[in-house]
Image (cartoon, rainbow, N blue to C red; front, side, top):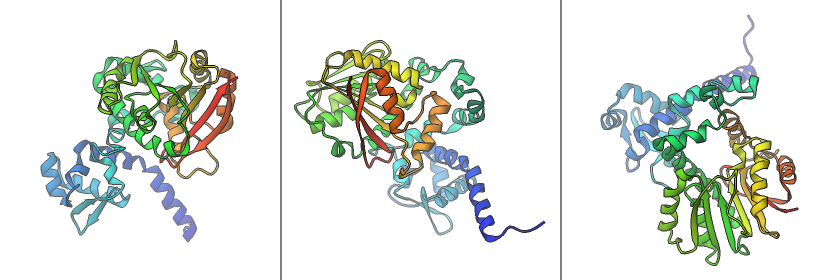
Length: 345
């Protein structure tokens, strides 16, 4: 058998890395579950020290830490000391934009079952959640029944919101908006930041009941309770009426085109005649800076049946819902967030 040449060997090595890359997601999940980033935040520690602090096997933990160091999450110093890197900083609890909840949510046994159904999704058009739980809205139904799952999901979305909002307030002029409704706004991190930047603006935070208490807390802690109302409801049925701007951040990507159009028609019925529709979504671009938008698109296929979209795809669903897409504004957000602006037709 002929040996591989240098280029072929490099190509095969790259493909091997990609085949086994799911190990990295699960290793990050282990580190997040054990709180490793917080344990080494102040000074490097050995695998033995970390194992003693977390109650796990030192030899096994060393292997996980060594692998994550190879991918830049941690730094290995000497044979058995591990320190935090700028990447690993985002695994700390409580830091701005913490991705620790995301590492917990998208890793572990439940996530492994979901990820293993990608071929089923491609063959059938179903989501993994439909296969596992029997209905397309199982992900969101679960949060109504499981407070622990809802808390982790909302914490994950809060972290994403911080990253997603990065650069948005500098890229887009919100100053002429008098009243902004954040539809599906979760715990209100986006709306709070916008309102703090624009003290004359009033806001409404609108989401399902599972997000109500967290939303009230965020708005109160930001000192915004006097000009921001927190309302629970179902955006498939109605949203608060008469505002001059409606923001939906990371909402429409959860749904297929038909459902997305139905949601936007509800907003169309509520919006002021000269109002603005603002989607803040990860957009697929031919010149995108990172691979995250493509990976997020597969995540939508697996979990919700939605998708990340191109500008032309957003233009089509806007028109079908009674809006004209007026412009898109790219940001420096790590998630590839783009403001997709529209006005009623």
